[in-house]
Image 1 (cartoon, helix red, strand yellow):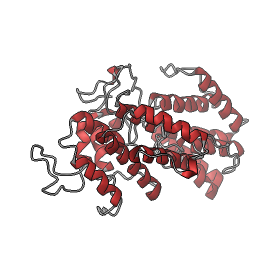
Image 2 (tube, rainbow, N blue to C red; image 1 turned 180 degrees about the vertical axis):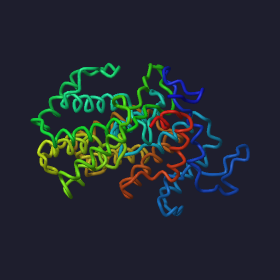
Image 3 (cartoon, rainbow, N blue to C red; image 1 turned 45 degrees about the vertical axis):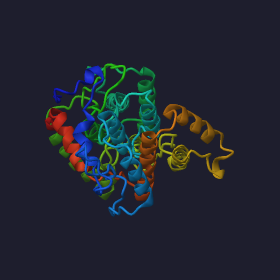
Length: 375
């Protein structure tokens, strides 16, 4: 992996946010709102307006009104604003991400943030554990692929789970498992990030795949898929779905869909075994309502709504986030209101509403170049 000279992942320094500031520019400021000492002619509301680009939304107007009173924004504030815009509720690290952002806004946390396609080393270790388990089930395990996983208990638990789901080996299962393994290890795992860690902890952003890709892996995959189709006919379609679903590894359902595929292979029947849901993929909508209520409470300097009066969790959440944010100021309310609006947009549109996300991805790939040319 090669990366821009300004990025030093090994010292906790990621891609500078300034490279993506321009992606936030949306509504043009009027003459009376424009700071004559700044070249910032646009509000940072591009991702808050919605898919119809309707700037008449009252919440957006209120957020922009706050921004107009802030004057020229220094880089440290723009970094925080960028973190807010990058908070995606469909990632595996949501809603913990909200806590990280509130800590950063309150001055007690770093600005490290992983966005589109970027995952932490914890997720890479988890995916590596699944890949090793599949390889071991095929009777090809034994080496550690040059990576020492921190959480051995997690690896052992995943191996036991995978072996239980797959059951006894037989020819068709072996074909399906090998194809699934190749699909998993060919997925790029980008552990780069934006911002910086206050403690500059070493961050191992390498390797970029769960396991080393075997030579001629793509031709081997085609051979496996051809054989599987001959044996299963039309039933092969579901088993040959993209590993983990169509989402990237950063999506919160990636692991669950991988387990559904593995469980189905074990029964040789699509969704023959459906793993139980866990807290990472269930109850997120109701949980989001609680976070929205707390964030609104901070912006409006008010108590929680009647719906949450007797909710112990919500009351504790309010205290935790309020403590992290600290004393209310205009720039904090601007940032929290923007975070609130961003999350509301995603629940409304059922997707991440960053307007120029393709350009964002290209910027990341330019700063972290070589791994995207490995395959």
